[in-house]
Length: 328
Image (cartoon, rainbow, N blue to C red; front, side, top):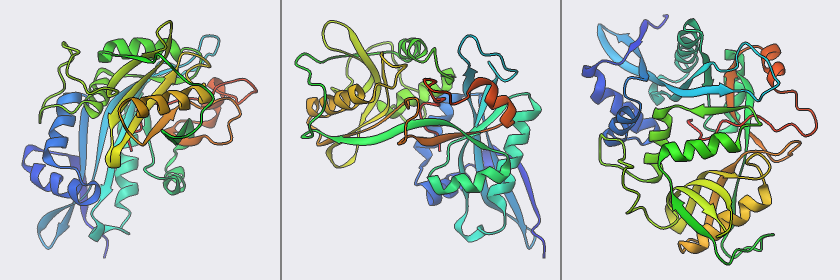
């Protein structure tokens, strides 16, 4: 018998069931979901799949779609998709008891069509590499890449710093530096909501509210949105937070050299930040170099191969497109 279901936006009365599903699949709680809503405000929607079971309604799957920002294309490249707004499909989940019914595919395609009907681009970030093959038949293409790795505080690196300095940035300051660094590669200019969310992840906020960045004091050493310098000139910006087991996580690390992707320098800075805050290691993510063999596809986009080829050709010396913070 064919499943009877509808897809609709989440209503206030769905909140407890929605939290239960997200908790079951991702471990999210009501506090985190309320914080997300406070960051994105009116720039997101939760879509639900509601299945009719013997006259009763059961929440079986959900997807959150939010405004991540705009696609930025370097000068000299012309494309119809340059400057388009990007709707990110996030937290795509199906109740374990309902898997195998195609609900994950159905809600993903539904969200993509909603975005495209408003002349926006639809993107997603697979939670793991094996899911790339799941999303490719749904018209998503691998397009945005990054380097991910870990460096131990005890590990030898190519650069050593005697006077590393950090300054906590507001989200807008961070975004201004970010746009300067990434100007020569295809990337996403983050929306205000995405900036608030990223800032809140590295500096936990009060439940249900976005962080207040008017005052820059109180952030833990080596945590927050940081400007990193050697005392003479800026070296990088990073979004850092203390992680589990005494480690530091740089959810994004951009060097001022090589369009954000000076890998050796980035690894050295990650090590120095870990050492500074007493962590054993630092996990990092940064843009990929041209021709990198270690980059991973972290962002998938729904548009034609012809349109993508107009803005990135993988020619020698051309930097791969960079998404930034991963929203899986």
